[in-house]
Image (tube, rainbow, N blue to C red):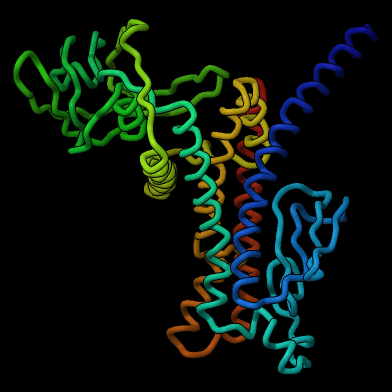
Length: 383
């Protein structure tokens, strides 16, 4: 009996390590570049940076650079922050008493005394850095491995499927969907998977002629190779591809960057479509995940190799950049909202209004984290 218990504890420990290490690797990359965006633009604007922290809570280790900025790794790995001169906390809320007592030299390097355009640029630099990181990673993968390509030929059509209802036949080659040229079967799958319930205009090559069809992908639950369940659009077609039919297109740096931008936009578009579907009631919110889910996926993806894990970092970087742009006080987008109001009014909102805004933002972020963690725990529980 004790041997079984020890074996179970060992398996649990290995599972935790297998998830935790890849999770930290992915998260640290994304958080570091997000905060680096804030840091670099702040330095360009002449703002004094007191602290650059990856993580929250007690410092594990760190050092001071020649500008006396404290760079540190902190104990709680879920996030990070850059603290500017005159800030009261990591959320860049100014220390009112300290700011009021500053002389002219101190005000010149204080964040809250910068022009609104400079403050907006510093805040926006974090999410922008996330998007740039994703583009660079995607472009690097394309440059190293090339772009997989295969003819989007339909070899078979399932009975009673969306493809059958639309009139697709075996032997058809899909040329375009909603005006977008289809270069490979994978391109077709990606569009179909994110278009459940949406009518698509499809042009196929059939014999020597082009035929226009309309198809509406059906929403289905499918499992990935790790056993995770996803709800995606399904057309009901299959491709039996021989090894010699698969090819890889080598791309130059310029095209790789363009493809990286397209991949980044795909993640943004898919995320916004899903959130819009949740708000409209077309999608279930149970697909929203938090830190536990990210750790689980990181561990699973790590088994596929370092390239897959780096690719996940790019996807997560886009997601975090996009999330931070939401106009919720406490997030970067909330700060940008306040700065936009300030630019229009010619003066900032009152301290009381901003304080209430941050309280509402904190409540919203906390509720989102609780809900996402609830989803994580429910999805991990055995069915």
